[in-house]
Length: 345
Image (cartoon, rainbow, N blue to C red; front, side, top):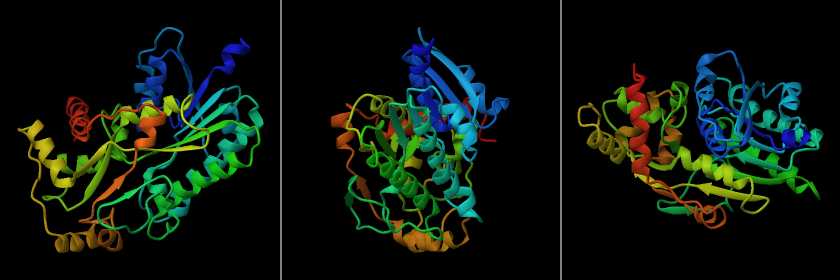
């Protein structure tokens, strides 16, 4: 019984977009999974987890955990051999960014690290970071960023999400470097994540800009260059990182880029019956729109719109053996679950 317990892999944030796909991936490989959610009685959060296929030898245990409650985190981590920490808040802006965005990532991650130290059973931690922890506030058009870069200029006023991801990953890396014989640690840094949502709540994250098009919340598109990766590839990278890649490794997972207009045109071509806005407004009009839009700011628009940014994801291909689905495939695979489940309304 003890041997089986020590083979458990914990997935925090298991009801989330990335977390759910990681759980599905692990179960398909016959792994014993402990999945944390905030409310195990909420069918909207756990229903899709309970319906997942489980291969021989695998099992799924769903437990409640509050990242800001250290006792519940310790209970969740206890007895696990591996931890995949995906739990975080995917909110770009808030009236109280410290409490709503930064603290859940930073304080929550510290609680996970403390629990790992206390457990004495954890041998590997895979931490979900983000390109937001790497991307500076400004860059040159056409620039390629690597994992050598850090978002050191992220601040609570202009980029609270970047600050949260930067601070949480720094915390994990400082913790790892302080250990002489501590657990193996790897961070995975995805960009905008697309692919099949397993739950309507998943549309609140990266796919939210797709929903803006499907709902025609705006009648046009803006000149925004978007880096994309498939959620299934992100999940596979996390699972491979449990046993592959460098300890202390930092892996960008990015498959390619599309302009927002290309995104809209691809959706329209794949779904000709849908009324998708495809007209792109000029840069200067986009700046005016940003003044009134609740999700962006004028300063953000000035620094980001009309500029191309690329990422070097070759280390993940080399060390983890990753191959990427195309951005177009990921984009088109995002749509069917939305339509089949009537999630647009």
